[in-house]
Length: 480
Image (cartoon, rainbow, N blue to C red; front, top):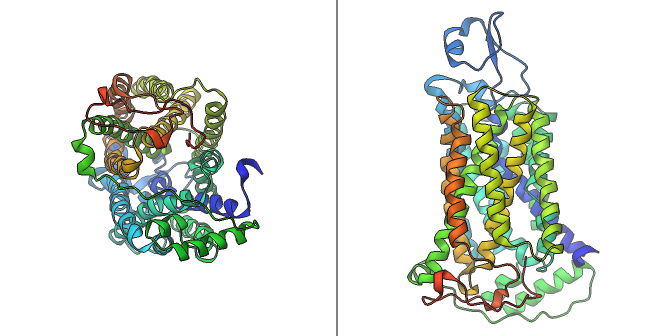
């Protein structure tokens, strides 16, 4: 099979797809915060809060595609409008806490028990979301759901990566990705257009990930090796071979190295400079990506058709990137990030002017779709550069700090959507401004890393401008 995928690897990939489908609850506010236009009596449909607040006795919603929590709890105009943003912010705060807590616990007690707990809690919270009797309890439930999402993204991701061959990670990025997860969520919302029922359905749809981890996965052999539990490691490897339908062949594991702490990284001048560049990239990708995603339910046209188009284009763009990156060796990481960021800035600058002048036609949707796809490409550059530009001793810790910075960006993103109440182009102009700053930082400080040998990346205080001391020869082991 492609990428040497056997039946066990296929189950691992499916587990990841259903796990990120569960994690797509981060953008469920696209539907739970959806508000259609309204009209007063026989007046013209609009989104004018002055009309909404002065005409409640004779106010009706127009072309309701989805019955949202915002409509049920009146999070539309006035003081209560901020609760829409708070719904997302509380959830993202939970993701931030989950990233810290579950990741640390899994390093101590193992990948499997923590992955099972995180997914179980998350699926339960998603189910209970549909039963919330009031918005106060609903916000509390979404915090714990976010906590579980953070744990899932960190622990299940690590678990999955430790079960796959390096070359299979490309298959994961190309065919089992965020675009597919978003499409799954959109189709559920379209089939069940009410926020409570959709929440319960999403919880049930995420169950395959939990069941596979419970009944199919052994403990991670990599984690067992790092803990010196060699006999249990061999049992896990034999179980994997049996599930894969292949003969067991002992795997040679690399010697365990000392991992640098965050303090040690910040004390190394070259690493610190590199981290600041990566933090800029991750923060901007996160705040811009989530802000535009959460704002996508305001685009004119059919809510579900628009979201399906976003989902399919994101999924297809991942496949195109992997194919292009594989077959065009001259396509560099700097080109990927800076080219994508430039297109993002141009698209959202155009959207700023369109929104300012009140244009909502087909071109608005097309430019939005293009801009969103290229934001996804900046995300790809973030992951690739974080992995390839850090030495082995601090790669995991460095990526963890990048994830932390991204979570902070996600918490701030809903505030941009709230600002749209006062000035509609707020989200788009912010994307342009932050993107421009990020582009400048990337142009002057991002170092090219494509085809580096990951085992030979070393950065010290003497590294000029943070340039890694690397073996420039392409490595068969490097994960592009």
